[in-house]
Length: 380
Image (cartoon, rainbow, N blue to C red):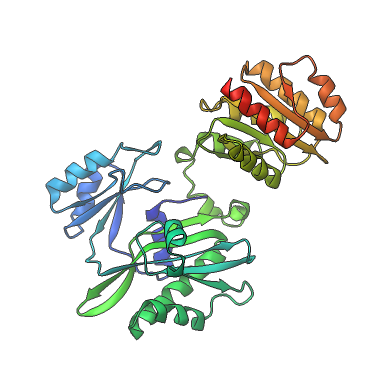
């Protein structure tokens, strides 16, 4: 679960991580009222749950009240990657001398939380890691010990030549770690962590903030769960969660219905390898019922970009005949006319094929066969 920047910064302040002086506004009148308690220039920042708002024109600096009114009017109601801006964050600008990156996330290979830092702040950290991996500093955080001061100190001295800044860095990273573990997060990030001066003293401050919570642990944090803005999430993903499906919408045109996350990823990779583009990640999980399959097809085919569907099931606990029955129900109820290729292998596969014999579904014997057939059907 993602939350807005202003919500993440409120959590930061509760954990003594310094942020700029700022306040949220939901309308022009409220923005003008908020500005009375801030000092110009003021940065106006769109609050949306996607990145790239700066490039989209969702971050602007106002030198006076007239510019602020103009910027707020242009940003409120703006569409950024399909999401409508309904609120803006007004913050006093800071004379930034340098920008850094610091974040904590899960490293699956190391099976541990890691602290990631870089002197290349303000940039897409994935891009930095790809083009200049030597600029990324990574420290494993033992779950039973947490981040120790000496670890932060070692990283701090690689980023700064000032002992006071290193101490600031230790404090900030220690508190970021507390947030990460206290609230069961999958990501806590400051980008950029800015260097600025106050009365000739150099300090660090969180100019931006990002927190992503582990959905599986939200039941332990009802106060955090209450921050969720369902209206700003992808509607199909919200619908999928209600149906107990693992679904992520992508930009391709080959719809995928698979059981098991590993098989789903392998299916998507194979589609790409053979020149196609997957439209989604969709894992119906084990012990799937016909109703679950019906819900999966309804969500998938509601995506107008989907031009063909590949159903790839390796049945163990999952029964192929249940999948087939749900598929038939969905085709009838939703009037699905898209080409569908099905690879149904495992428990009750013969019953599944018998159910689908008179349907327009194309059968495949292997994953590769299924991928080739769905791409062929897509190209028509």
